[in-house]
Length: 408
Image (cartoon, rainbow, N blue to C red; front, side, top):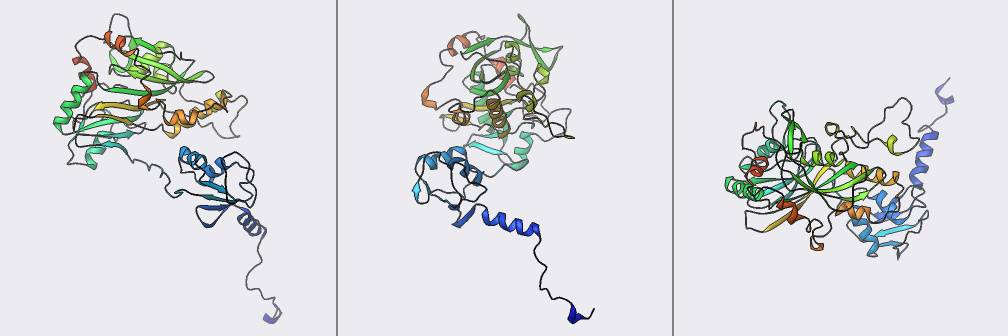
């Protein structure tokens, strides 16, 4: 065919996929000249305002979004809206807030600093990272990472939490600070509060677990309760929320024995989730919570939670820098929060008020009083008068290959 007989096309006609994509983009939620002004597309119609903002700003904390709405800082078509009415296609949503200050997800290996002063600092240890080096395992550990990041800071180990737990770990800056913090732990003036997910319905009333712990078959990998033997160990426990077959527990160890919280809750009959060493479920599976759930054909079920359900959420102590009382908190990790939300759904507590607020501040404001205050004097009275044995457990030597027990 001669070239003059060929049809001339400057570009091929759009195919069905391109047309569909263009239509989707035209009907999707979009910015209206500013990230603070959004035009609701078909993809978000019928959502209420809170869910719409959650979808559009996934990095913003839930409390910040709720605060925008409650304060009247979100307007729909020019009118402030604080109720749950559904949005419509074409609505213009304006936010009087800093929508760009989103939480950046933690990068792999990144450590989050929680507190720092002239004598100490604290970090949020992720689950799976040992606090200090283990003798027979060559893997990264928290102490080594910190020493490499700040070689001139004279970082000193003061206490530990379990490798498979997450949460607050405090380090001393210099030998004098280490000595002072060691004395605080030895005198039992340091208050440590943990959150744990356990099996069964834990009593909502405060319980004092006074049960001595000793290594099983002489190995510290597992501790057992043997009446009349072992070292004294006392833990205070109360249930924060009870689900169907599970409980979210607030635990406070008054001594620092290896695996104390894990062993004591197992002794109470409520093993931690994902703690096979203490007879807990190896993982939390949706198929155990949701009747009739099955993974897609050819796929294995991914667990909702596959690590020790224990989080060091708060520690209170006196800083050697100026003698002031310091409270340090580590927010509940995303995996534990997601597991708790699934337990809530499985228990048909979809409308249970205040769960988000509870998870954001599980122990309440400091000025509300200590829920364990009434039980503390009697619990401390059960312990021996000389606290030196506690110091030995809480304060391992400086050596990088330290092999002393790791308290919970």
